[in-house]
Amino acid sequence: MSTRTKNLVILALIIAPFVLTFAYVRLFVNFDNMDRNNKGTLIIPHVDFIDLKPRQLDGSAFTEQQLAGQWTMLYIANGDCDTPCKNALYYLIMQLRKSLDTDTPRVRRLIAHTQDPNVELREFLDDKISGMDEVRIDSIAAEHALLPFMQGAASAVGHIYLVSPDGKIFIWYSSHDDMQDVLLEADKIRADLKRTLKGSLIG
Image (tube, rainbow, N blue to C red; front, top):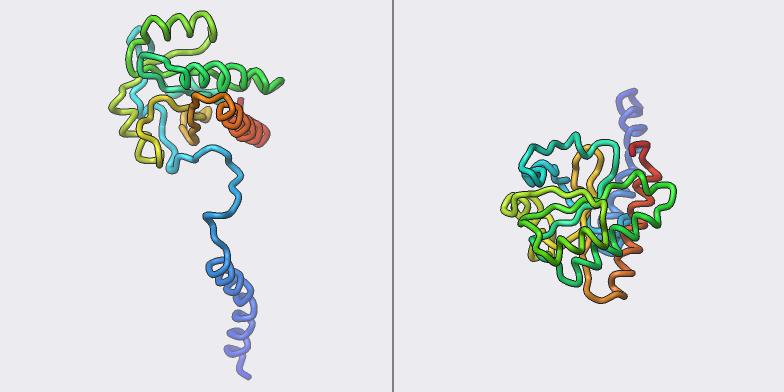
């Protein structure tokens, strides 16, 4: 057997296990049924928060650098706030953030308004969930940037998002009217947050 033939045989023996593994996975493993580590719905590719054209409430500039140093729980509102909105802001963001214990300071609360908040929403923000950061975003830009990656959602408004310290919106969760659904969603968000914070030295 020539040296070239020997080398080819050795190469084949090295590659064979990888080929067999690949073939097995492709033929017998259904990726749709595999358990995913994340509980929320990933946004792939991640969306830059700056693509939502954020501004401070007074109209001044907002930059992604203002998100640095913390992970962000974001809610997008369109001026009013129904029961799912209030459940999201109070239970799924404010109370859930408090439940993170020593990790609480690593997470920022942010509401992005596509319209000026009405009286009911303004009172809710001031009386029930005070201390939440607020920005104004462009409604068309938000829908254009986020909705194509949110299968099953009718709008980018009314959902909760996680934003990385470098300004990437990378996962989203639904808001709910029924409290049982709220509690189930809270478990998902908390699991993803705890795992994210554990694996990160940022924030």
